[in-house]
Every structure is written in C-alpha cells, then in structure tokens.
Image 1 (tube, rainbow, N blue to C red):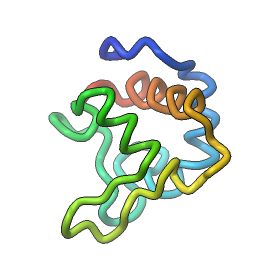
Image 2 (tube, rainbow, N blue to C red):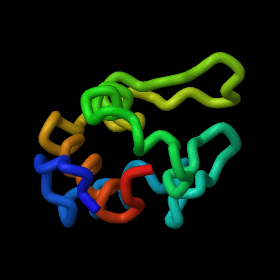
Image 3 (cartoon, rainbow, N blue to C red):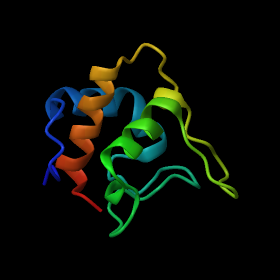
Image 4 (cartoon, one colour):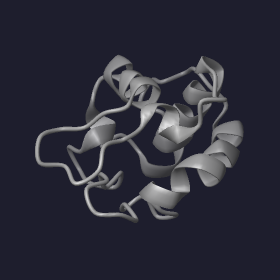
Length: 98
C-alpha cells in the first residue's frame, strides 16, 4: 500500500514517526490532539497528491478553523528531505492511501 510513492525507507520513517510525529498524530494515526487529521480516514489527507503531502510535512500546514497547525517538519528542524520522504513512505505503508 505504498500508493506508488517509491521514495523513502518506511523502516527509517517508522523510527522518525515515533520520535517526532507520534505526540500529535498518535500511535494509531487517528490523531492524539484535536485538529490533527485521521490518517486512517478514507478520502483523507493521505489521498492528497504526494507533492502536496510532502510540502505539508516539510513546510507545515493549517487550514482555517484548525485548533492546531502542523509545524514545519513536525517541529523537528533537524530532519532533512530524505527523513521526510522516509516518514511519508512509512505513513503510506502503515495507514494506506486514504
């Protein structure tokens, strides 16, 4: 279930997800804090085009009415583009394609 996203290493992304992303997005991907998206939702955020998803991970994202914005790189400025691709790959492997 990689949805033709063939960049990144999902095992490395798993590690990063559990260090950086899990606090807000939760172990099960349903979102641990109000306003975070549910990665398991059909037609949800993981159904967006890969470049859009990558831009949201890298640059942060919020939409009007959200209680909390996604910070750039999940609030971890040490992550590079390869790290972000790894997380992106992990998300699709773990939660599918929306």
